[in-house]
Amino acid sequence: MNVRRLSIAQLSAQLDAVPVVESSLLRVLRRDPRRGVRQLASRLRARQERLSRETARLADLFATEQDQRRLGFTAIAGVDEVGVAPLAGPVVAAAVILPPDVHLPDLNDSKQLTPEQREELYPQIMAAARAVHVGMAAVEEIDRLNILQATRLAHRRAIMGLTVRPQMILIDGRFPADVPVPQLVVIDGDATCASIAAASVVAKVTRDRLMTTLDACYPPYGFAQHKGYGTKQHLDAIRRHGLTPLHRRSFLTVRAFQESLLTVEGITG
Image 1 (spheres, rainbow, N blue to C red):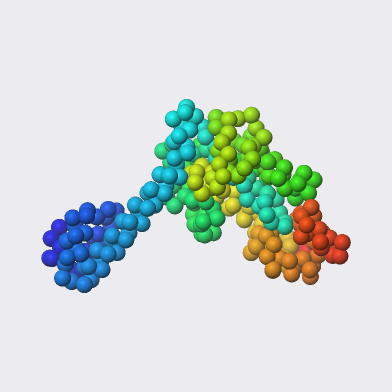
Image 2 (cartoon, rainbow, N blue to C red):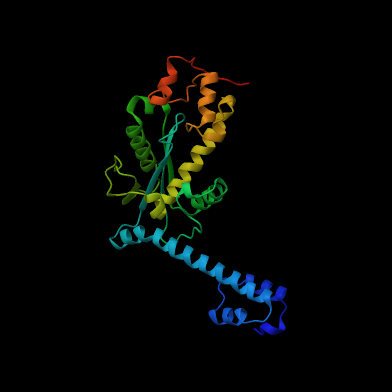
């Protein structure tokens, strides 16, 4: 490429379409007398540094699965849940088995992604995975069992519903799942393990969509906005309108309202 014969616009158009620009060409661009070309070189270099960091992050994210495959496990399910802390709605778990050659750019812990990024990743995960299943524990089960045991129940339902039987389970958190399958409990697994990260995205999108749907049944509560978490908006709505069947009465914050507020069986207006 004869850099000097090309305009800045021509260089930008050609090089923006190239995934990786050779270091020798970047040196030529940085030495060009034209300021715009030097700025282009800086932008391309920054882009490649971001790409390098992302490639390294994804390699680390898949390291746990690769280690398990070297041990002979081929069907590896990542498991994660969302909805442990909210005051309302179910706890939702997902189990995801990814193939070894899967390509999911930007895969990450669902908490590190925007709602738009999660919605973009969700169909990619569903299309690429060998198997995906979602398990839930309802509000009544949370109140009857306690949140920890209800979460483990959701984990079990997610795993047992997989159409491919897992040989190894990678589960986020501190507690193993109640299933007779070899397991590895990974603290902060949603941020460090690919299949758990994928499960976190599936669980989060599923629960968020559900809470948005339920918002139509109880419009004054704002479930579509806060998804049942104890925000000021949510607590103010409980004070004004009372509790709904979606609220977890075993939770201390909700229990504090229970004796003084009327239970709302349904609001449609």
